[in-house]
Length: 141
Image (cartoon, rainbow, N blue to C red; front, side, top):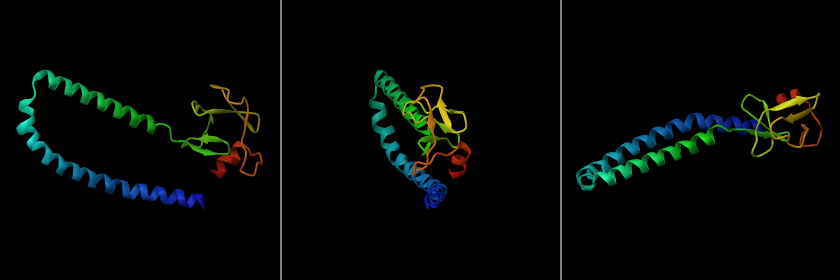
């Protein structure tokens, strides 16, 4: 049932997001045109050089912060399952909140994080508590 929900979410993202993006862009274009004309006519002549430099600096700073936030949210898309996290290529990742490093297979069922040494050994388990192998967990994802 969860797979159906994920498939539906993916389909909605692929069909709705481009349409919403186009509508928002068109609205911003119209709004920008309505705001830009009075801004250029009345506000820009009243700004001196020092104020303009400060405004440019603040605009640059705002853009840099926005870009940092957008990129930091984009890079870490992990799915939680079997007590650990998985990346988009179904590779196991460390369950520690601040780590998320790739896990290494130690033996047939145990995983270990070489970066933060989270709990030293990590065993994959189903919700029922049954131990499973890495290959089986990848099949069930």
